[in-house]
Amino acid sequence: MKLPPLNTLRFFDVAAQTESFVRAAERLHVTHGAVSRQIRLLEQSLGVELFERRNRALFLTAAGRALHSTTQAIFEQVEDTVQRLQQPAQDNVLVLSCEPTIAMRWLIPRLPDFHAAQPDIQLQLVAAGGAVDFARSGIDLALRRDDFHWERTLHSVKICDEWVGPVCRAGSHEAVHNPRLLHSRSRPTAWPDWHRLRGEAARHRAGSDYEHFYLSIQAAGAGLGLAMASALMVSDELAGGQLHAPYGFVADGSAYHLLSPQPFMPGCKRQRFADWVHKHCQDCLAELGLAQNDESALPSPPQVR
Image (cartoon, rainbow, N blue to C red; front, side, top):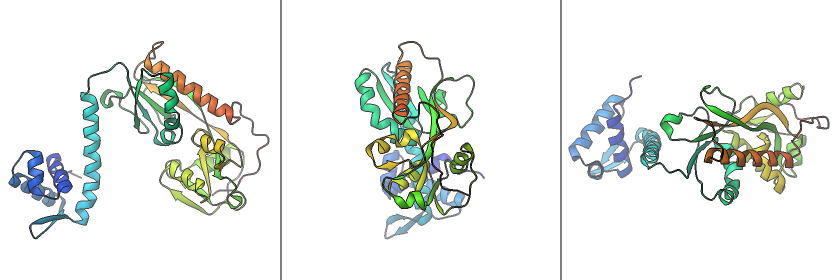
């Protein structure tokens, strides 16, 4: 498929924001006619109308709204990246890319401690998962689970093992004894993998699918069923009594790593963050009793397809 010219998408995005070719022309520093021509070219390229013109006013069509939801996100990301790359390099700034779920549910609540312990480091957090292009993104470090391949040229430091297990809202008798299993598309084999690690057969149970791991965990906290979770990501709710892990946790063989385009020098900002996040992850797992892999006393779990 041949994509429309990028310039037409940019003109469309600004016109969609303002719902006015005149105001879009002012913002883009071109003529009203130039905006109109670019929008017409885009509509001809796509074969759909993007604007409805009524009484000298512009309104996005359904197709226009769908396209704008995408162009708006894309151009915002581009602008953010360009702004970050154009900023003068600062020795005290550390840009960390972190998987969204662990960023929201574990890292961010602990950042006040990091700022107190390392007040001279300005940490900038970018939520992302999978491969990272250090050369183009301006990222210093990436915190990732090793569920994908990364280049051998990258420097990696293991932070901790991944421990997983089902969780539900505390006091939810139904979720334990007649569970509705909550699945996530970002970890589609989480339930079968967990049963396999325990040496148990999987059977069909009623369940619900969620787009992302953190959504299924959130649903479990709302009392909608039993979700597979990372021990790190639910440690605060377990400690606070909001969530319950009725079958404990098992190490699934994966681990979290810090990735860097260059080795850590003693005392550098990368090493200091690595030391801090390693200690807090290990302390967190130890508080959950997961310093050693002991599955001997775990109760029987629900069955899953």
